[in-house]
Image (cartoon, rainbow, N blue to C red):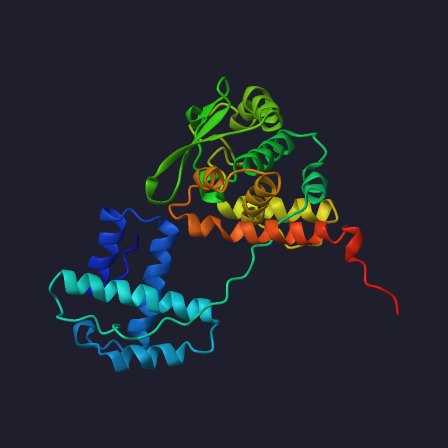
Length: 298
């Protein structure tokens, strides 16, 4: 991950997460940053001698942050010390009996179907336009995470059976179907425009950047931001908003929650259930059309 010298115990924990738990690189960086900050705030006090009071002091230091961030810090630190307990470096987890802040869940933002149509209605003039169109259509058709999309390779796409082989968190794989619209633009991109982007080079990755390498998360974010400006969309849109839109639109149109869970790659259905609240919002909105719903005039 990095050549920077860390505390040996932190480094051992990160190696465990990387090689045994097989956590995604972004998650590893997040854990590392949290633990480095924790160690710095405690003035590099020896990790094995940290007490509950030390951890509570650290949490007070980050108390100005929102509850979700503070909760994440505690989750990371608690799992780190639990690792040290298992490794028999310490006898007891000093995080025991420290409560995690209660976080009120926010409903995920999503686009309406009209907003999706507005965003996706882009002029197709250059190879990059066709690549962007194929990426957007596939992302919305499958509900993939952006990290999953950029890691796709050409061999992961089955045009005949109309599905994509996705590798998610913890390198767990799943099969996700895609629709006729995304198939049409994928076919055009792969057969006609991807070779133009590659020029005389080669790559296994499906989506190619202007340097003939794999497109990055940052690259996709810039594309999406630019498209929002071009399409006069003021709503803040991220790749994850398209994932939320995918799940919400499926449920609003009668899809089974378990199927949506499988398509999204959620290990726990409770993660998927947040989208049912969005469906209920639509139900309440539509119910307003009931003729008896009008208030009586005095």
